[in-house]
Image (cartoon, rainbow, N blue to C red; front, side):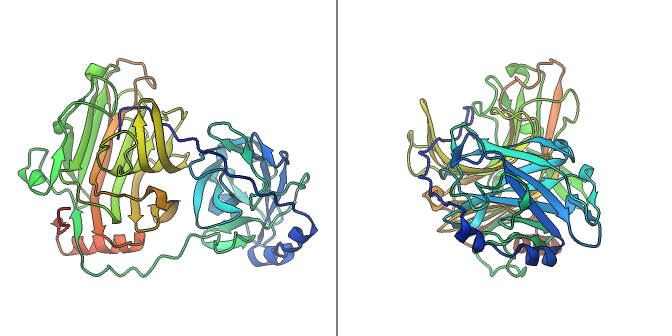
Length: 476
């Protein structure tokens, strides 16, 4: 975590590959009749931005129920597949108008586990419970959706798998997929990528190897076992966050919930730097590199007390030190939840970001990130795996993003949790308010890539055995 306002890099746009969807391409599409019969849903598509490049892509969609039973739209996910303009290009989703109401439609950008020449990510459209259900024979009506590059540079769409330049009116479009729960209901994903996320490996715990597990079973921030177990509760001044803020060890506390000890990080402010108190706990040693990192974290959308609206960051991350501007051995891998927006975002958003390096002044950064604009209030299982080819993020067992080999770590890192304020622009009140971020456990398994199911099984094993702490990871 650094003191500057986050920015995403702008890389040169990838050269567009022109794919004219003529008769040959259309003939290669899967049978629409077969897809409809198999799943009971049909996705219809048109575009109002048909150029090879455009200020924004405009996939307008309808979802129609061709089955004999009603389908709750909250169980439906629709995926539009496209090729990013560059590895670091970021995108923003918007809903211009929808019969079901834009407030009931969400859009999340995710990366494909098996990139192809025409797709390395997708826009996943989901629905809240307020969207209701689709009766047999009914459709959603118009969903006039769009997305654009975060830097508002023109985007190339002629090489996008789901794009149809000639689709000026609605028609069945199998290059967009739909699923109901875990069942593929419509369409065909790019080669090697199913509409469902990859099946988890077996859930048996992995073979013994170097591990860190901490159930955070401590009496308070002065418990001598915290330092003995390799943690440091931060008290030194400095960034990130509001200038003049302090980092308070006493605001890191421990309580029992449902039989487990839970760590609480409290951050508070009364609208000035001098009244802002932030919290952080981190490992004293930078000895963690490849393998699996996992934590169960409770994010909060609202303060425990006082007025809401502060630009808060709630985190779980690994990091090492930047030895020089743009040093190529820097590494950082973040889960960052902003319940009230910040960094130019107007509302809640979850980022996962893999960092190669950066320069603070003048600002330059090399990173890749995934994002989801929705509330993540409540408990979530966060997993990130690092091997010799990729960094992969999961939230609640679902693939959230896969980042490339260019962002792999060259040196070991520490493990960190913190909660801090980006600035004081989100809430101008001088009424005191405080926010909580809670952590149930943390796990690292050195040099082994575990599935989320394997993580859960391993943690359950520790708790069944009454083990609250283990650290067999050697010092780097």
